[in-house]
Amino acid sequence: MAGYEAPDSRRHVARAEPEGAATWKRQAVLERIRAEAIEIPRLDPGTFALRALEHRARTERERRLSGGAAGGTRDTSPAPPAISPMPARGGSPPVPADRSALDPWKVGYLLHRLSHHDRLLDDISGAGRAEAMAVLRQRICAAIAEAYPALAEECVRQGSGPAMVDRPDGDGRPP
Image: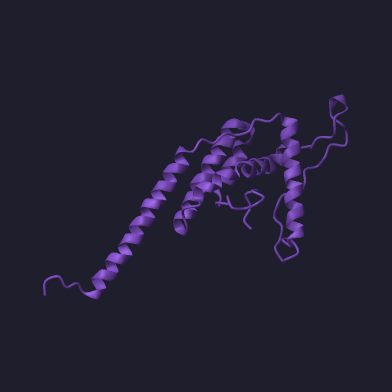
């Protein structure tokens, strides 16, 4: 019969359209992520370290209040850096004995500050979202490494791991 379509062929066409739309949407989101301007805040070293420590303390407090550690989840975040017992020159507060121990926290602080870029992920879900999250995370980490070359190694570590853009603390560690 002319004009007759088997029910199976109509279902196949109906399924193909959403897949095509999802592919188009995924490509559009990835294109927006690649085109997004990522501006890294430039902070003097003392202010940067202080803000990273404050951010870390705030996220730890939130984690405790929400029952994160008490809920059976093992905390794998690094311990606070050792503090030099001697004050720095000029009578300023003590500084960490190993400044590089703050690197994960500094990158986490900047990732949190830049979390407004997560809005780019609003239109996508499923496997496409995971891919978009990874691309966004890598772009942000590359921009951080460019702005703060001393953080480049930590940016590579956090940027090449699992995408954690949705993590509130942005410390680059799996939940």
